[in-house]
Amino acid sequence: MEWRYALPVVVVVVSAVVAIPLLMVQRTRKRARQAVERFRNRAGASLKLVTGCGLIRPPNRVPGVLALLDDRVLFEAVVALDDRGEVPLAQVEAVTWEDAPDSRHRMARKYRGARILSLVTSTGDEHVFAIAADTAPAWEAAMPAR
Image (cartoon, rainbow, N blue to C red):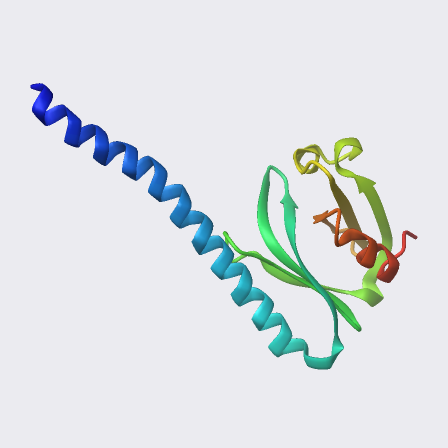
């Protein structure tokens, strides 16, 4: 390949390598804002807390949005749009909080400086969320460990 053709190819490749991750981050943030808006519209006055979080679904962890209502917890992944759900508070039997580096959940340890919320329901299902350290105190006050 001649050098006069190599430079444009290098420029295109480098541009693509930089642009694609930036576009993915923008799309993820947009979906997170849309999820928060859906939670606010759906819950109305019963919405107590809403925050971004990491949804831990072994072997995966994906960014998501977590909302606390009067009677349930709503969650939605912003990357895998089919991963959404709710946990009625009446079915929650155990609430545990851990620091991310010390978590028993291997995938949760990757969230440095986060607090890990684990909800175990009466059916035995465990829902694990990584919540940023700056918003975790409000969540811990609303959902103390039991």
